[in-house]
Image 1 (cartoon, rainbow, N blue to C red):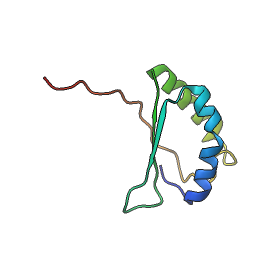
Image 2 (tube, rainbow, N blue to C red):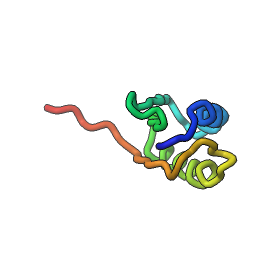
Image 3 (cartoon, rainbow, N blue to C red):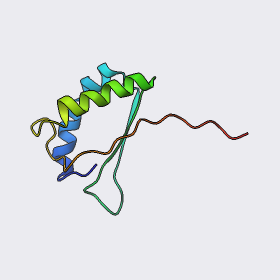
Image 4 (cartoon, one colour):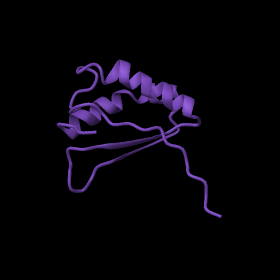
Length: 89
């Protein structure tokens, strides 16, 4: 999703570390496109789709809906819950 300032965004993200842990986040990766530093990609790993959906609901209702809880967020994040694709053959 688009952000206005990485440092501000990162500080808010780090502030939700306990919420991620409590929601069952097993791993996380943050990436930024080399040609657009005002954009962020957050990849969170969960043991189940249900955990992922529950955390997405938390983000939508408790974090992204509040400018105070999501400073530096620029617009509505685009999200998807993914599952590993089966190996070929």
